[in-house]
Amino acid sequence: MNTLTHRTAEPISLNDRASLSAGRAHVLVRELTAADRERLLTHFLALDEDDRLLRFGQVVPNHVIENYVRAIDFTRDTVFGVFNSKLELSGVGHLAYLPAEGNKRTAEFGVSVLESARGIGIGSKLFERAAIRSRNTHVTTLYIHCLSRNSTMMHIARKAGMKIEYAYGEADAYLTLSPADQSSILAEMLQEQAAVFDYALKRHARQASRLFESFMPVAVAA
Image (cartoon, rainbow, N blue to C red):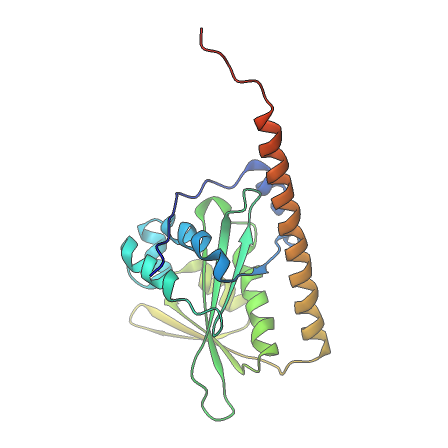
């Protein structure tokens, strides 16, 4: 079994916050692969107890998160991410496909955003991308289960016009999706291309910064 190493995620930089707060169009969502598993682990381990409670429905310890990340099947589910300039995951959306019932197919959506990256529309953009992917993969209902006090998820659900049912401090939200069409297929393709290009630019900028720093003179101790 492969062992995942991890480190604490750094807060989103001022440059990230300035560019993202300028408009939600700058929040680009990229589909993740198994190659991003370590970054996913770093992201989830950076969540504090309250955030873990809201994301997973309970305060889960580190080893449970490690098992969760290892168990993600990228050939079955779809995971989306938003990267900051340090190539760290500021936000993650997990779209899990539930067993089909006849012609009805349901997918469950879960999202987490680091505290330092909130208030700039990352959660909403992850949901929008998940909804488009759901339509394009013949999902008829997008489903959210969360604690009713999860104000972020409730805001996303209400904004999307989802049907919300409350019971015993928990909430279930349902969104009936339209079938895929040329517009939804093209929209997803363009969004992914833009996100991949954005990630490449950030990676090259990161490499250039490290190269520049390697040529900087080292301070000599007195």
